[in-house]
Amino acid sequence: MNASPAAVSASAPGAPSAPAAQSWGRVRASRRSADKLLIVACTGATVLGALVLGSILLMLIVQGVQGFSPALFTQVTPGPGSAGGGIANAILGSLVMTALGIVVATPVGVLAGTYLAEYGRASHLANLIRFLNDILLSAPSILIGLFVYTLMVRPMGGYSGWAGGVALAIIATPVIVRTTEDMLRLVPGTLREAGAALGAPTSIVIRSVTWRAAQSGIVTGVLLALARIAGETAPLLFTALNNNSWFSPNLMGGVANLPVMIYQFALSPYENWRQLAWAGALLITVTILGLSIVARLVLSGPKGR
Amino acid sequence: MVALSENVAVAARPEIARRPPSPAGDRLFRTAAFASALLVLAVLAGILGSIAYGGWPAFREFGPGFLVSSAWNVGREQYGALVAIIGTLVSALLALVIGVPVSLGIAIYLTQLCPGWARRPVAMTIELLAAVPSIIYGMWGLFVFAPLFARFVQIPVSNLVEGMPIVGTLFYAQVPSGVGVLTAGIILAIMIVPFVASITRDMLDQIPTVLRESAYGIGCTTWEVVRHVLIPQASVSIIGAIMLGLGRALGETMAVTFVIGNANRLSASIFDPGSTIASRIANEFNEADGLQLSSLMALGCILFVVTFIVLIIARLLVRRAKVA
Image 1 (cartoon, chains in turn red, cyan):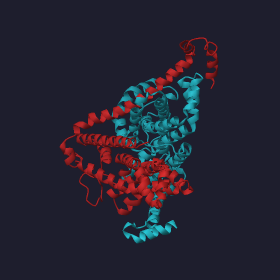
Image 2: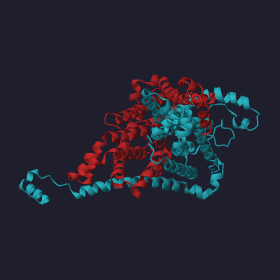
Image 3: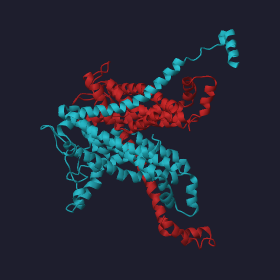
Image 4: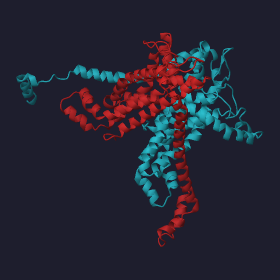
């Protein structure tokens, strides 16, 4: 507050008589340059952010597109030193584990979000759960990997796709809880009262009135969760690991997946491995960015906020 | 009376009587919702419990000395957390120092300077930065950023400061390969920018327009409005957003693993390779067993406690700010 009062009083005496343009001319040069600096710095920061995104996409396209071929989607990842190969097993493994994660996380997350918004509301327990869910939302994913390793990999005697799916589900759940609760809170109370006035018990009001009103928001939450877990690497490192062949149908043993494949192949000495890593990186990034854009469009659609 | 006549009507024409919703179904739904909510608690407790259990042998073997020992010798079974703790803190703090001004700049641009038609696409672009998987940041950092950084920053700066006191050690790269603690800090900064910027933007948006307009009304420039009106109004939430960014930077794994160089030594220079708790776990966990495995778990436990405290502070400050 030190600069402005002095500056204002300095320009005030001349202001009433002089035209507007001249009084702006009397604003102290230091104030004006500070203002210019702010505009340049803020615009620069935003441009910088956009440039980084552009540069990442450019890198992926330049390096990844040449790796695209039919073999990429039909062949399994090659062993060390062997030529050619594709990433079909990694794509399928990622799809299976991501689907597993979402299938587990969606009902749990939607129900927990419903509890917070409709039953628990402002009770102490609900506040505690809400608070801890927010913390789980930003908890380091590598710790979730360690947890699932202790919980499933060690007792079951080896890496498995199930453990990978559970780890992804644990990451996806808090996202869904959070968006579901936020969206249910936007539903006007009068809708619930109207349902209750028809004699419907709470559970039916929730299922056929509140959920339906918040549908697009809940779908957005699931899509955002999907985008979040599709690229997660750290938790899969200790749970599903990787595999250079098709995984067994019972999902036991290592299950190939895109993120861990990219991690291992990108840092390998083999040219064809690195090429596959780039192609996989392009594939996964385009998928995730597409999902995020769709999620935001669903939310800001005609029924959105 | 009304209820009675309804019953009569229903009894007379049973085909219009719908089965009344059973109270059991209502209770079942409520129980399911409650159980799901409790599951969130159980998972968090499970994470802490399992990591503490896994790390217990290391804590018992090395005692409190585990925190201050810089040893990490697989052959002699000597493990300490100091190097990884320092690497984690330094890289995260560098990320804040670089990332926070940029985040504030973006938030101010989006709320104050950006023309209306461009707001949504620009905001979307910044938010998409948050969606890029961390492993992609790692590849970008290692293959695109690190070579440029080595050529245009590390080598010139190292040549410039060589032999100088303090800065000569702080900014001297023994091997100017582009990877190192500062590189990790910069990549982390890019990763936390979208989170901090989006929360700050929401907070700035919530400030009543009247406040802004009255400041402009007494002749303030945009800078003065931002500096003396907006920032003080939103300061608590902005600190919360920064803590949230810190929480993310502390636990980030894959991107850091690519660019930090993974060396177990204490170095005074931020250009030199180091390691963080998360990168060490990611690097060694799959080949580890016995005491090494347990030491890695103990590292995870330390990371859990630190991020937990940071995130609690963040959440208390932000109080239900929107997080995408």
